[in-house]
Amino acid sequence: MTDLPVLKSPRCVLNRITEEDIPVMRQIFNDSLTRKYLAELWTLVKTDEGIKQMLSSFNFLMTQNEGLIWGVRLNGNLIAFAAFIDLSCNPTVIYAMHPTYRSRGYMKESVALTVQYVLNNDMCSYMQTEVHNDNIASVRLLQSIGFDVVSKDKLKTYLQKRTHIIM
Image (cartoon, rainbow, N blue to C red; front, side):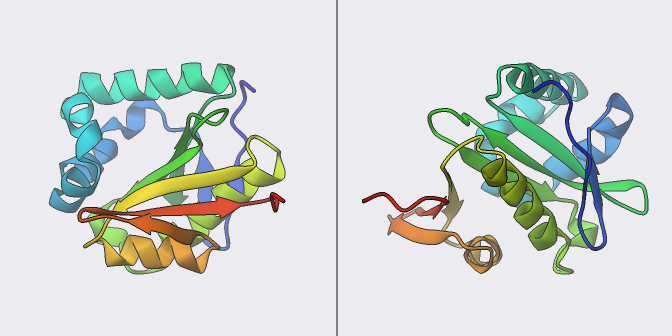
């Protein structure tokens, strides 16, 4: 796949993130909660060049059917992103929202839509993610769209969504 499909939720349009979106991506990544919960990305995305590199990496992953990243837009303005990596071997969902738009349901409808797209198009047979235990909103969001908690340790909750029952 090389073209990212445009998806529409009840209130948002999800499409490609461009270089013009880097200032908003910077605001998303500079947010203290995003830095805390996506700490693994922080070393890469703490500069504009790093964000460009991340977007370039996702564009390459898309050509290999290994990853996707959508920008979530409200009235044309970027407010969040939803991404998937390692689709063939360890399909993982990652997302973050600009702090101004949190707690309004935009992320739930956007993540649900992207997960549905990936699974309905047989890009993988299950999806997983890990969430910091104190990120209760994210755990609840994922559970509300059909993810189940499969394990938990001192730091993180591990969730998974299956499309096929394995016997």
